[in-house]
Length: 420
Image (cartoon, rainbow, N blue to C red):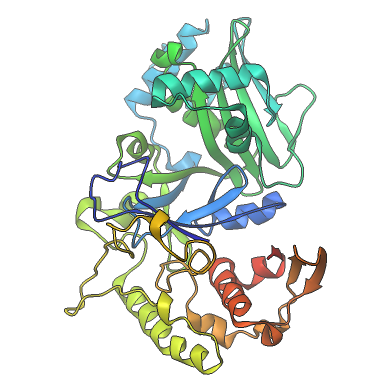
């Protein structure tokens, strides 16, 4: 589904001509391996909702990043953060000239009489919920929390089963979602919501007790998760979600020596190497040559699909102006409230704009043999499973299948059961 929203929690729509644009779908059951592949296509999750942004149209430029131990430079502020934390929980802070991050973090992971880190299943408890309420109220000025929203956001996951945690709660024996809980003097002071995946550890969200802001739990938890990922779990990459250069709450992530995902071919490159000066570069995740090819292919194959009775003309969004320059305004009229749109129910929600970096072109789907794709459909009307037969489907179903192919690619799509 394609969503355009006039409200944005990051920039608060500082530029009224832009809006928040995202692509996403509700998931029922994924394996951690399937979600791992989605993360490496630029997707993230909020509970069981899987989404990515349209980087051409979104008000905030959100770039998928990850890091690993060999990319991290242990700056002075990291050393101070770890030393202060160790001192506060009763550990001996490092006094040597040589600072070993792994050694100092492992003091924290090991714990002591006052402080423990316990890996728990990603399930609701009243203690977790009360910490969430306090965090949202005092950090985000949000007093509209509910148990239902907490469960949906931080407990629910798309995985078929929860991660299997070792008997001593120190490590993970099977991939999935966990709550990594920090206890100080037997009181819960922080929860890191994490996904343990085949290629690495993914940070979903962190909540902490505002009474302990001085412990810099956001910074500390990121360092701890990076070491935990590499040295305890033996995994390579630490996925930190998105970075937004003009958002103070998000820009700190680049201090961790991250890589950024290139949407042209889904390769990873060093953040500084790829990005240079963010403010002066609109081509961070793709180059103009790729974008022009994408537009050209979509224009040509929009006509070819029309000859087969599948029409995409209303999804052919304009990317370049008459002078060949990028025009990155919102794809819809910013003065028109989405609530006022006549066809807000079904007709546009499933129509993805054609020119989205990172999605396959219409050419790819046209040249693919979609009729041979063994794709299951669960019919909510009939209450049973059946196979799609592309050439025999009605036009709206064909468009949905083509858009799913553009979004997921042939391998992930062939593993899906589509609920329509």
